[in-house]
Length: 136
Ligand SMILES: Nc1nc2c(ncn2[C@@H]2O[C@H](COP(=O)(O)OP(=O)(O)OP(=O)(O)O)[C@@H](O)[C@H]2O)c(=O)[nH]1
Ligand SMILES: [Mg+2]
Image 1: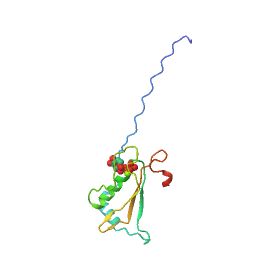
Image 2: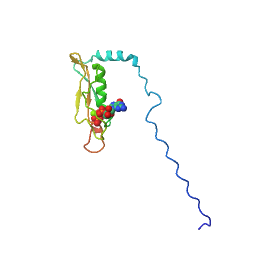
Image 3: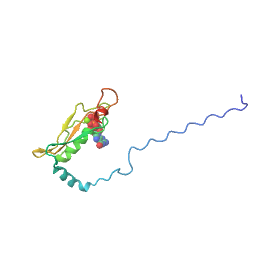
Image 4: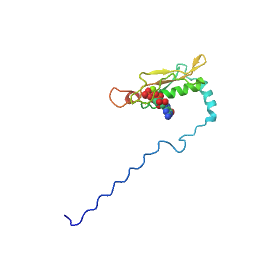
């Protein structure tokens, strides 16, 4: 039919390369030379309402995002040594942290007035991990 042979379809164009996972430049400038000032300010932080003992910082995010590690990093900075109080593990697909826990940062004989609440990672599926609707 048609009298002439149809030419073969051209090969599909190759898929574009995936976007780079790294930025070419820092997405935020960090004034590292001011970190001592930042640490001092946080150590001397006083809450204005005497009925509030702690500012609670909720660590939330996907499984393996680094929530528990983030607390360890902050605590290490204040203790002046590496601390691993919050257990962290390589990403496994399901939350490594299994229970809600409040982490305090020791400062001499007392705790700093801000704490971190570490929770399970956000997971898809019913009854798995933390549910975003429970957080919002
Ligand atoms: N490259 C990189 N890896 C990180 C960072 N923070 C944590 N990790 C690694 O990511 C993995 C998971 O870290 P976790 O702190 O257990 O993550 P999580 O959000 O608490 O995970 P779940 O408790 O499972 O929800 C570990 O292997 C960490 O070493 C980071 O800032 N950079
Ligand atoms: Mg965790």
